[in-house]
Image (cartoon, rainbow, N blue to C red; front, top):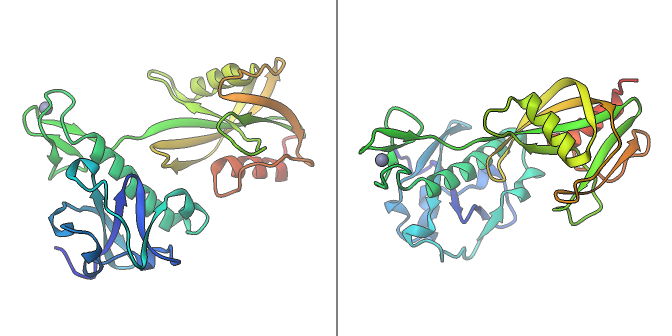
Length: 268
Ligand SMILES: [Zn+2]
């Protein structure tokens, strides 16, 4: 049941429609506000559950449906999901993150990958369904490991090629088909910095919607080997004292949490 006071997370090109200067969940557009978007009432919305007793929906403006050129006007603007990381509580960020992930999923699964028929939202599952082959296409999630390698009061941090600043961070990488996460971790560490680790300890996990990652964090104790940087994804890697850490990601990310947690609770 659509209510005119329901809240909408409007996503276009992976960006979110926001009121200028008020990037909070409480000022998301309602159906009444959506006059800014031509034909908004003709777009299928996707339920994201409830927030503060209000229904929350995703309104995806897919380029393929002719919405590429929608511009925000007046008090509205398009914001990048990364801008929400520092501004929101974890709960609020999760809704925005889920909306953007669903946007990418809806966009990439408009047609069945087997027979090419158009898909539609299933009624029994949170999935897109091909009625021709009875195949469900579920939202995509990519598991990744992220690990802090430690050796007493030192931690091994690496500078990633994609960073434009002098930031050092943990080792991370995607799980490959057939691997368990422990195997992924051992392989990624060996590939990226050339050392061996053991005594893995689970730390926690974080949905990282850029675009689909589920980051699974571990501490890993150094075993042996000299640092050998792969020079592909990693351009530098060094041992750092936990008392003199380099610039590293903030604690809003699991990478920052791993580093700061270990620095406060070292395994000496
Ligand atoms: Zn099909």
